[in-house]
Length: 496
Image (cartoon, rainbow, N blue to C red; front, side):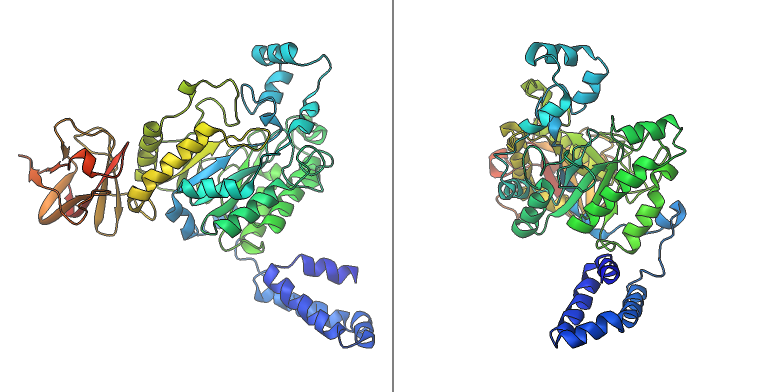
């Protein structure tokens, strides 16, 4: 029965349930029937399952393992509509919580402040692996995290399942004694958060970050020394982990990283993505980024990231994402970070407006502490973001870029659209209470409103400039629920 068990486990969940149910029902009829099934009916069952393979698209793949074919796959609509996500960098690097999530690499390479930090605070002979037992996560409450993410207005979450240090936040069979169940938290952090988000906040899509390479993995370093002519590391580590993650946790985003030293042929990226899009349990809804091998970034993927904190400021012709950090210096939590290193809510909202106006998604990163606590300043920023989205979210979610992205006359004004309506993000309240929109021409039917205005059904007054542009008189600030940045809703207008 080992063959049939393996075969069933490799099928999508919907097929697997049906097949197992039929076998179990037959077995309930008695041991004789079961014996017949196992002895004489096995071939027939296998043929049936193979037909189910064909019915579910597993035998004839829709997407070939080539970039031309993979790039032809439409972007699942939920991702573009979501607009706002939360990135979570968490791992053993959260224990020293000094300098950067690249702590191990920088310390190993002899970077001064990292070496000095270790000499000043730790005994001689202390290794990076000695940090792992201190990665305790005793204050990690996944349902509380889900509540905070919900309050932030985020529509998707991406957790670092494994960073470049190689430590997995799930009990991977391919990371013995260097995972969160064997060492440190003694629990499945990925599984706990996935369950909390899906039960408490089912409208939030769950995604996973995964680093392809590991700084000091011997197999990877040997492959690298051979010019990536061998794939021992990929076959024993990278690919098995990716298949394990997708089949176990069914993430709707696979956010790949750590790819840049080797070509995609070394990583076998196109074959994995063909499986992901054709056969995986998330084949219909999953999206992937563009970090699948040297030269792939900003060229292939469901959406492009191009570089960390990528924010081109102009409309892009392919879906893209701006992944940025609340801490301007580090993706992981830093105990030594001063207040000035954190984005203010005004800076955060300005980046949000610019990003979505140019067709991007906005993925803002937080770094929890080693004990599973969300730093107060990061939680505050997320809740501030959510309170702003509560008022102005209709200009963000499911919006599209307009004809113009930023205003031609007034700095700090960005545009989105939804149907025939245009939204103008005003990042600075004008001293005279009037804002001129040089990219907008009013018509005889034009109306202007401000989101969050207590008299929301009452249009705002506006005039035309000599050039025919629109100047809107804003309401008194105390009459508006929103703060930090404001949004005008404009109907029946034309692009200048």
